[in-house]
Length: 153
Image (cartoon, rainbow, N blue to C red; front, side):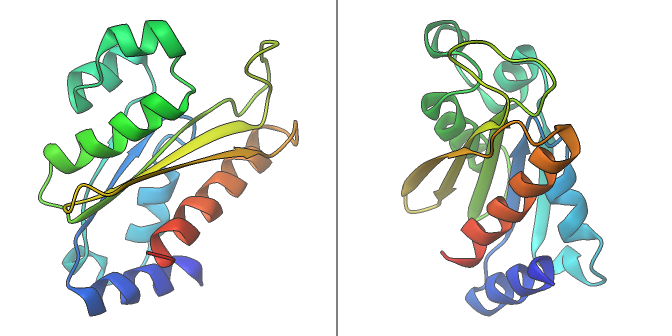
């Protein structure tokens, strides 16, 4: 199980994890906390589905959201940084995307941006285009990808 591997990986490194999730609505946090004993590694999760949530809970500048949109590299990076700043975590992963249904010309269904930040100010962002697989499948693919990002750090 990928979540169990992530927890063990972070446990070995002595890291605490935080998540900042939009389109997945807390599913990454749920996957991690489904594992017994995860409390020694998982610090907290932020579900910031609305733009106001991203601003109020994570400190994402509303002008950044206005300029680039909530589903963007810039916002994903700031979400991960904000999760670190508002937690005791050593590493944070963020997810913002269009799970569907519904999309725009510039932000198609299945477009998801990920951010990863650690206490050493390293920020990684990654864009995935899962295609219009359907809401459930896009969210599941996003959770798997976020866990893989954490495992590969």
